[in-house]
Length: 362
Image: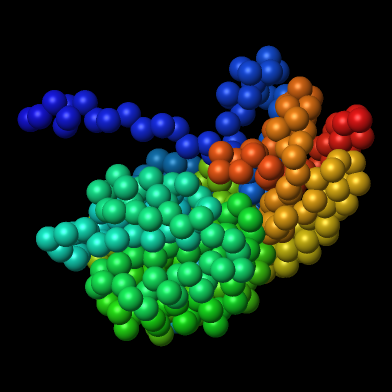
């Protein structure tokens, strides 16, 4: 065994949102006292009802996973449940898929991976970790789909294109016709398209999940925790060709989803009344946040979804520090110092706290 295998090379940490513990240490404010606006997680979560103790004590049942998949089929509008692979979070899928695809292709050389960025940093990291050559294309929203098409038109077999839709952090969203065209082009070139729809829940009609039968080499990723506000449940789905889904599910293995998550996930995915009420509230709250931020600072709206808002201005760092001193965490970005992302406050007390902090910006 070589020294490199014994001692893996250290990786620099990615600047993710949600690092309340680091913020608490920096500003000397206990973690419990922070208002975390650094993520795109719904602050008013789906209400978790009583969970029978058996779901904590025994291994999850196959029938419970089947029920979750049936609920997911209805929610994502997939042709069948056989197109769905459930995993303990979208992040787990992002980490697993590069190695799984490598085994499927068994190519003597690693195909190129093209990530349409700037976007969620774990995509690049996980493809690099699996030893693929990665090009992270720094694009503007209006050019992103056209750039992906240009790549696929001349791509070698096995090439992978990663498109996040809506994109994180700028919120750019591309209609199903554009994504379908990308997926069909990928199939004709014997290439792969990975579409990360983690923030699609507020715009369900823009998803391409219902068209997966037309996209044999497309893999769609969906997140449960963001829209339903239950990131701790750790649940994500991959939507893909039936044979591919069967193979990936075998790779993930049995009992991947905890019993309590199976119960809550099934309930939430079937609760259409809560979903519609939540979409309306999030839309109204996003508009309220835009007004609050732009009227009390020099920031301008640059993009976003109904789960997060993306602003630009030269004073982003100073604003984030001002809020940090008041125990409010927002998200800055390594790729652009003139951008900042806000999640939504949830309760009336949270809104008042942010309003007072913004008013004191001076």
